[in-house]
Length: 197
Image 1: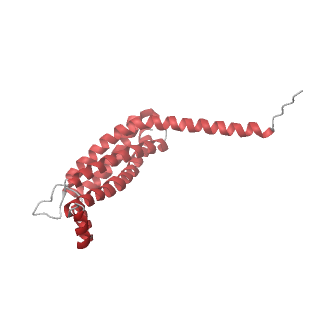
Image 2: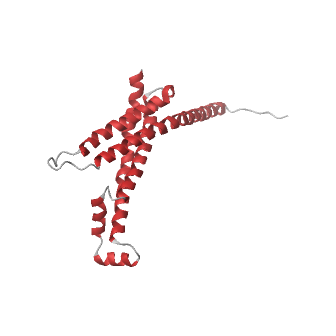
Image 3: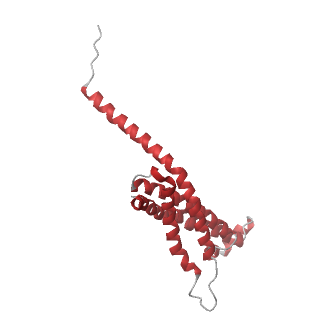
């Protein structure tokens, strides 16, 4: 005859495990629901960042050197990022029930919009339109002997300056820009449920 006994702690241990699994499945499903709307909003935000970068390339008028259209870029970047977060909330619609979910959608949209802006910035830097001083500064940091050694490997000063510009654009616009864009867009996403309630 076999007697089976159940320890009193078994049912108590298994129920929190099942509830954690259910919560993680729900959070994964919620995250998947937010991905598509966030990516749509990131395309719009990335286009806005592209327009702002092109505006920043316009030189100031000769008679007013202190007035530049580049001054519009920083406030414009704030507006584009906040609007990207709000747009992610609009695209997600009823999937966003609170500010936390809106912030997630906004963060994702802003981060990908910033990545798009970083890729565009690297392209503009490769053309010599961005980060020109950064590339020249990196080339100037190398000693003449080092430049001669690099020249023997086929790397000219122009190639070093080009690499410096592209790496600078990757760091400033790609990494830092995408994080700042994600942060500001998450604020816009958190505002969405408050504006619609």
